[in-house]
Amino acid sequence: MFDFWQRALVFPLILLALSFLLWGVAGALPAALLFSSGILLRLISHLRNLSDLQRWLDAPDSSVPDGTGLWEDAFSRLNKMTRKQRKEREQHAAALLQLEQATAALPDGVVILDATDRIEWCNRLAEQHFGLDVMRDTGQQITYLARQPEFVQYLAMRSFVEPLVLRDARQEGLVLSINLISYGKGKHLLISSNITQRERMETMRRDFVANVSHELRTPLTVVNGFVETMHDMPHLENEMARRALNLMGDQTVRMESLVDDLLALSRLENDQNPVREDRVDVAVMLSDIQREGEAVSQGKHTIHLNMEGATHLKGSAEELRSAFLNLLTNAIRYTPNGGDIWMLWTNTQGHAQFAVKDSGIGIAAHHIPRLTERFYRVDRSRSRETGGTGLGLAIVKHIAIRHQATLDIASEEGKGSTFMLQFPATRSVG
Image 1 (cartoon, rainbow, N blue to C red):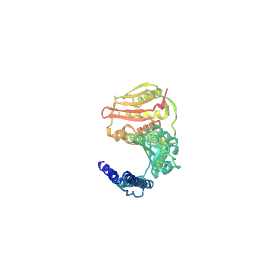
Image 2: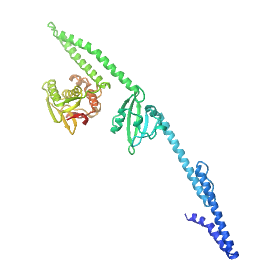
Image 3: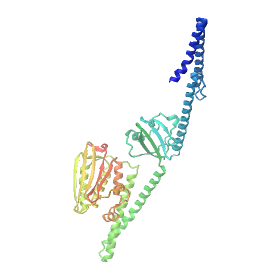
Image 4: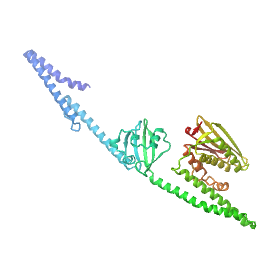
């Protein structure tokens, strides 16, 4: 700063000294003319440098002027600053290009949304998935361009724990899985994955299972009928033959149960099969299920029923009965004789819960995340002995999903388990 003032004052001081010297020699008029001419020349120099600066500001990509006097230092600093900024811009542009190339190579669509769900940027795959144009649609509300009701509702709910499966999003047959990830101050990263092929394979699998199950049902019924008929024949006295018929009968019944569960699961997985919206009297239903459970248990367990709060629920009576009964029979299978089983219903402030708690053998923690998988068994030999098909909890999980409910499992080995269905307030009926 001192150097600047030193350089700035040199010319005026020299000019002033010369003017005083001339005044003493030639008088006031020549001194005034000298001083005025010096100031005028200095002003013209400043104006010329200002003009150069203005031309450069109008064309900032051109080279910075050299400048004279004090302007030389200013232009030199400006030149260094512009070179630094140009280098930073080039680095940022290169980084942005790399980012665009990386996102273009991603197998998923990516859309950056601001706090008000306006599009800030998207990659090419997202443009294809939603029919967007990043140049045209930046700043637009995403729901103005992707108008499917389920997508609009999903975005409005602000609950992105589970992905949204969006069918026929851009074209008929296209199936997308939508995930939203929160970051920054209210912003969201929307990721769209094309799962059309996976959905097609899953549909083929469901159709195959359903068709095979239908085809198996009739021959199994026939075989079981013949086994029962042969078992009742009066002349069948051979003990080995009778044991063989008993075994055939048991296995046939088990296969029929498996086929029934497979068909039930296929129906639940069918998106074209909407949930019935019955007004279900849970108190009556659970009382019936308690009696049915006692018949299955044959007096080997004590089954308790406790209910608190409103006892009406909106949903499919058939599916809810199946879910509740599956949880109870599951507890009966895995609770030793003489054990206690509790069916618990609570409904506080519109949030309904149904739980089955037992004093059974319990489940190791590492098994719990996989319990709702088809045919997953903690103890395969015990499952077969108790007559389980390995599909009961998978059926319960799908019924829960169809009713927007959650299935929570808590268990401790040697102490028992608790299976709880929690229903949203929209399912409660006053």
